[in-house]
Amino acid sequence: MPVEILMPELGESVHEGTISRWLKKEGDTVQADEPIVEIMTDKVNTELPSPVSGILIKILIPEGGNVEVFHAMGIIEPREAGAESQATASASVTGEAAPVNEELAKPLEIAPSTSSEKRWFTPVVKAMAKENGLSEIELQSITGTGEGGRVTKKDIEIFLGAHAKPTAPATPISAAPVAPPQPKPADRSVAGPDQTLTPLVGMRKMIAEAMIRSSQVPTVSTVTQVDVTNMVKFRERNKDSFQETYGVKLTYTPFFIKALAETLREFPIANSTLTSDNQILTPKGVNIGIAVALGAKGDEGLIVPVIRDCHEKNLIEIAKDLEAIAKAARSNSLKTADVQGGTFTLTNPGTYGALFGTPMINAPQAGILGTYSIQKTPVIVDDMIAIRSIMHLVLTYDHRIIDGLVAGKFLAAIRDRLQAFDFFK
Image 1 (tube, one colour):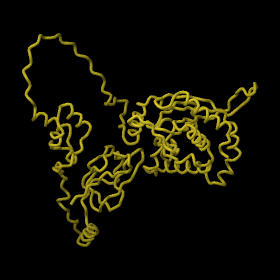
Image 2 (tube, rainbow, N blue to C red):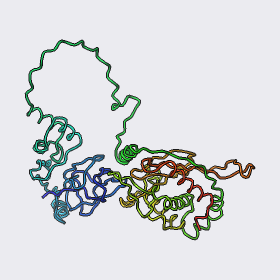
Image 3 (cartoon, rainbow, N blue to C red):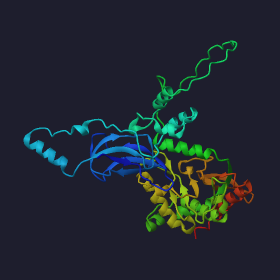
Image 4 (cartoon, rainbow, N blue to C red):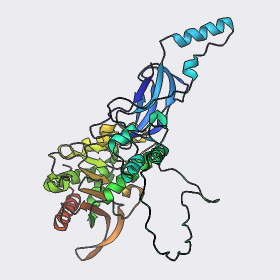
């Protein structure tokens, strides 16, 4: 009996995923627990194993398609252990090809569900049903011709045509002047001879959706300048011994995380979230998400894994956690849990020379801190010109729960901690 490959629940807040890659194609033999498909959720790729041994006879959701939790992605025809090897061995002895199971060779036809369980419909189908006033019962009764018995746009059109309601004769009206035909706008979905079109799928699609959600939040950005000369000198003196002693590199980012974590404890409102029913949710811990590059070359996009309980960790522990998540991101081995539970985000474009920017918050978090490039700069110190190591901090925050005054004090507190440089003790 065919077995469905179901989309599992990969996290309590994960409701759907995207098929990033099928590791097997239709007709391939698979073994139980062998990776068969890659699913992307929250920008993390997860390999899902085959539930049984057999033959993958049908792929229901192609690469780039979305699938909801507990819905089928493909179908496997189970095969008893050793059956294939016995058939192959027999063929090698007799010199004849192994017999083909004609039932398995036939295309799989999936009838629409007749159970009381509600079927899943695409957003396009739901929109058409709503636009044409179809009830839930009518929608459930439509026979689907798509993959897996899914109702398609064409199925809706056929149903509407067969159940068209008679319309009253139109009342004669005086002829109105006919407007001249307007030129059609250029179809941007068709590439010209010197253009290419690339589908927005996988990670780029999920990033785009996250940016749309974040763009709905009213945000403001505040900037301050920081003299980090003492911090730079400390790192230069200790970076070699730090790596020899603790086994990790001492970069500037752990200093930023430490200063940010202590400031979030001082201003818990910045560590909060505005819920959908307009309540301010403030966690007790500080879990800081760090924007890091994906892939060995760092050119596969950005992801935001989380360092948990930063308020309880010293500089050494933070440096070790940071290197661990960076390695996992480069090897694409982050898990779904690694990118969940963040209460605030830090992004460090200064690592690749960016001088200034206005980062976008990671909704529903209340804020994000951008740390930018450190530059030797002439400044006035005690009425004299001095060369100091200067950088910019940019805070973008949710203005619904954080006022400008609080944001200014919050940013100044981070600045003062970095300039005083005594928090590492």
